[in-house]
Length: 134
Ligand SMILES: [Zn+2]
Ligand SMILES: [Zn+2]
Image 1 (cartoon, rainbow, N blue to C red):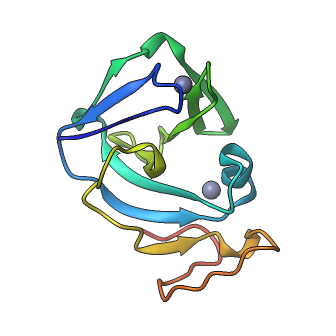
Image 2: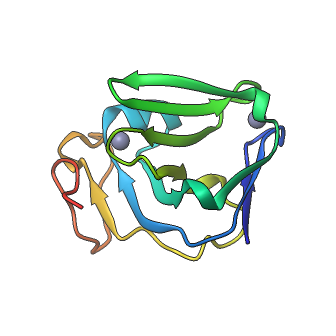
């Protein structure tokens, strides 16, 4: 069981399943949503995910057509990237909100064409200029 939650602790979740396809997204929207050089997302099957605390505090923000990002109303932690049409059965979970080891590691960098000018990628993971094909 993987568990996690937001910065203030108001929202907690558990995942009874495998996290997949973790990637570092360098797009400007992910950078703004997290305040960091990139966001690390891992796919979680909706059926495996359960909010155990703070459901009413989870704000849904439609950041672009077909995309909803969720965050904690109290502390602002980014939690989910939901693309309902493209991935109806799964969503992207902000991997930094996981307690302990999520059982997966980032496998690629995506949207590096819009990465922060001040950040240099220094690992050997594959890079995509735009969104990945998978
Ligand atoms: Zn919070
Ligand atoms: Zn992004």
